[in-house]
Image (cartoon, rainbow, N blue to C red; front, side, top):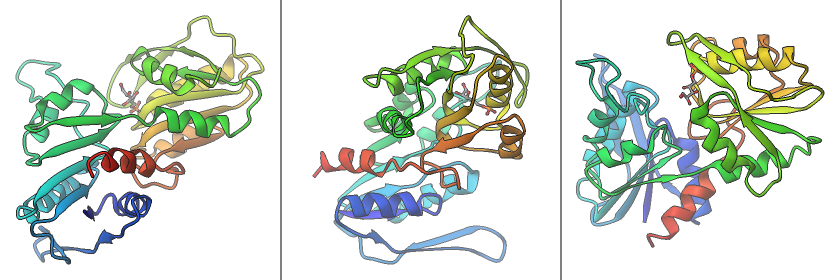
Length: 284
Ligand code: R5P
């Protein structure tokens, strides 16, 4: 089995390879003078079983993934792991004549099998032209939060969409959990309304699948602080953290941000490598 890490997932690919007792194959990533991407897999992969790991937060990362897939066309078997899949939030047509971008992307993935991690909407899995499985980092997040030793924390989802995730993160750990009510006004502004959660004097961990512009979490932090929460932590699987998200979150008073390495940021303190390695072991 050969593990190939794309440019967006070199650390995660290396950690996954190590968890499987191997090393990732070296790749060369470069650009042509006109800006087009160039890459080359250094090792021979002909007739090998290949695991390709590459998140696609940017369009360039998506192109790199497509190039890597093509470069592996002589592999015996190709499993593609897309830890964070860009465009997965455009999983349906919200307005007439919009593309279903998640479908457009998924259809390009020419592999034997695909794995995603906490994909925003599971129905997207059906758009891949091959079997696709979603891996769930909820247990890892829950165990990590439990390790903080916070006294009587409450886990809160900022909207109903994240309620299932917060329930799974709490599962078996005995945490209280609840959710807020979010209305999105634009790409980076939301309003958050509370339900009747009493957070006075409590440590709160806000849990969501991703933090993008930070708008959702910023409003949630402010509201929970106004209501008397002691500290507000954020836990997410995918730290997109676009534009000035980190500044907005700290200005709103966040205590700390816990995220996984599906996207490799300073906040990615928790690795999903064991989750991916476990799924890959089943293939061997
Ligand atoms: C949306 O449904 C997601 O679960 C997140 O809540 C959302 O993507 C966060 O976006 P932002 O950080 O821009 O508010």
